Image (tube, rainbow, N blue to C red):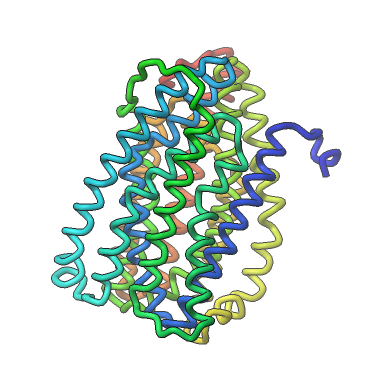
Length: 435
């Protein structure tokens, strides 16, 4: 395959392979967890757990403040230049800030859960799971930042082992043991197991990171909250589309409908896993090439990443297009009603993979402002579409909302990269760091 694609083995390809393998393992663990919840508690149980989990995950992104992405580009460049003091200073200050902010946001989530579930959504059964998973908010934020810092040092396997596969795998294993033992599970049991797993992995990640940087000196480091704020606003807007669609379905059509939608989303997250794994692994390489001034090689790396992602994603797309009802039916007969929604989102997510990590190119080249503007348009349009369709179209309306955001985001990102690095290069221009 390497000869067909026109390149030989390199560190980038090895990192992509490691990242994809571990993200794939995380996907298996995630499916196993949803499968167990579905068969133990039904579609409603999946809906309750997933609404609480996606809420905690969204809150953890806010707690991370985009510093995970900033750390990747900061640490990767400093580490490769031998400036270990600067790398350690940035890591230490970022981790401390995120841990403190995570605790504050967790308290806010817990306090807001009562009126949100009882007075706004009128779904009091969601409250225990939301309260329990609010504990996971700082843990998930710490894991994100620690994983990013470790990835910046070049330890890809350890980094990706922490972010997703570890705590999801532990939760699935514990829940599987309980299910096999014949224990009657309460609706909040998956949330309790998941929260405990994130705590264990956060502690393990901190210990691992400390062992890596222990012998390094420490230099004072600024906290790049402006860049981080722009990045986190983009991430929150992007993730809020899926979250709003899920919560809206739960509020309007019930927890079971939300559970069916979330399982369909999980299948499509396999494409997102390919895209995210490749983008995360390519990020340090893109940042390093940009720092060296080799923009042509940077664009080539991004294109190569998209091509590899498309090759990996084609079999998955084919399976979903051929047998969407059968795939959803593995979780129970009620889940088959999400087949049309699954197909819509799968097509959109495949285009996301094939486009390559264009958003990551913009982030690694300090163009957060462009990514932010793109996301405002994509998210704003998606929310408007959700309002118009969720009441009448239900699952299909939610799927169209997610697909719309994905397509708009990718088309605009491709256009921005072309304008910043290809058209200006052809014209002999040299765009500044601010574009």
